[in-house]
Every structure is written in structure tokens, then in C-alpha cells.
Length: 174
Image 1 (tube, rainbow, N blue to C red):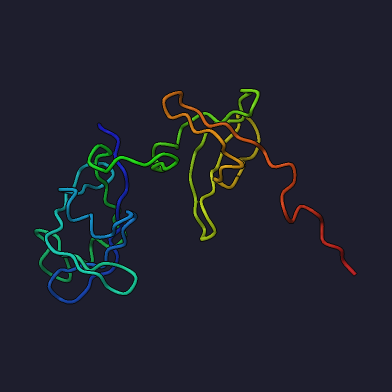
Image 2 (image 1 turned 120 degrees about the vertical axis):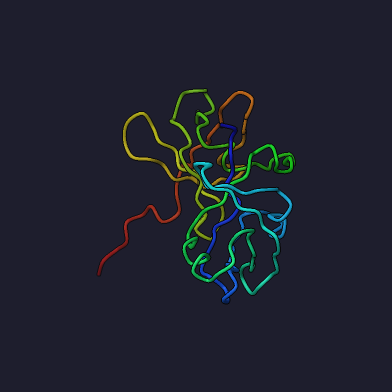
């Protein structure tokens, strides 16, 4: 199966005619209407967005074949995917999370540190999670200083481990 990217998550039903709240993970939220059919992760179900409009912090979407509130409620929490090749190309120094996951992480001397297993964003920027061969995973900021080189063709990223992480000092108790 071709590589797929999660582009949206269905939320609660909206109204009584089968519309759903839709949270998108794309630069242009309304682009989900133009990718063609969206599928579940396993590819077993397919959905076509027939109408979409912006709401306060999400979209309200109508999906082909979903006509009642009950049908819409059954989709709550479902993630929707599109084939990687249907998405636009990226600019230099811009990457899809799916392109980074699985890459080898090495230091400047090309010594292995582990593999990227996830990309997180808790609101203050992207964080890469690296799983070493042994031991606990590392969470590092995905910045040019920490990740100066991303070599997609070579299947690796170069990591400059920070010398000191702010907040490392133990608090003083009085």
C-alpha cells in the first residue's frame, strides 16, 4: 500500500443532517475537499467530502453517504488519510512528519543515536522523539540548531545534542 498521511480527524456530529465537525492537519484547512476520497488508516472505508465550511476552530463538513446525525455520530474520532503522492510538494527545510518517522538519527560523527519514532507538537513547536537501541527515548526540539541536516534520500538526520537543557538544574528547596 502506498504511503498515507493523516490529513483530518472527524469530531462530533453537527446538526441533524449528517454533517460533522472536522479538524484538519493541512496548511490550507479547506484543501481536504480537493484531495479526492479520504480513507481510514487501514483503507477499509472511504469518504468523499461533498461540502465544507469554516467554523470557529474547525470545519463543518458533509460526507457523501452520511445523511443522519446517527450516521455522523458513529464517525466521531475517525482519522482520515490521503495517499502521500496526492499532497503538494514541500519547500526546502519543510517536511511531512511521515517523511521523518523511521529515519536514522546520527550525531555529527555519524554515530547512531537511534530512529525517529514520532513527531509531537504540544504548542511550543515540533519535538522529535528518538528511540535509541537501548534506554529511554529522547525528546528534542526540531530546530535547525538541534537538527542541522535532514537527508531524506540518505534516510537520516544529523542531531547536535544540546550541551545543556534549560531547567536541568535541580530546584533549591528551602
